[in-house]
Length: 159
Image 1 (spheres, rainbow, N blue to C red):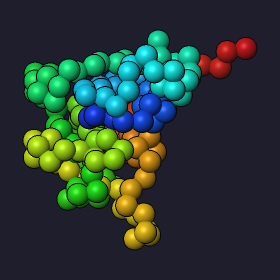
Image 2 (image 1 turned 180 degrees about the vertical axis):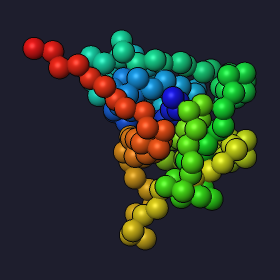
Image 3 (image 1 turned 135 degrees about the vertical axis):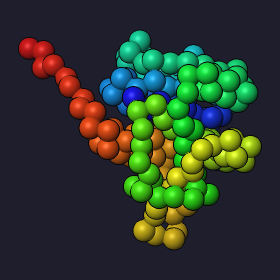
C-alpha cells in the first residue's frame, strides 16, 4: 500500500483532512518536521474529527530522519510537485511507493525533489491556477494509485 508523506505541512486543517483520508483508506501517514503547527493543534484535530486513533501516523524529526526510514523500508520516493517531470496519470504506481507532498506555500524543497526516484505533477486545465489544495492533491494521487493497484476499499455496513 502506498504511503503518504507530508514534508513541512503548514496548515492544520489540510493535514487533518489528509489524516481523515488516510484513516478511511488505511494508508500510512508520515509527517516530516518542522511542521507549521503543533500536533495537538485544535484545528488539526477538528479537521480529522474522531478519526485520529485510526490513522497510522509516523512523525519524523527531520527530512534526514524520514529518508533513513524510507531507505530502510524500501520503495520508490515519488515527489509530487508543480515542478514534476511526469503527469501523475502516466505514473505506474507500485505498492511500496512513498508519495511525497510539500508545504502549501513552498511545495517540496529542492533537496527533497533531488532525492526522489520520480517526480510527478497534476495537470491544470487553467493557466491561472498553480496547484490544487494540498488535501485535494493527496486524495487525487492516492486514489489513482489505489485504482491502478486494484486495491479495493471494503467497508462493513453497521446497523
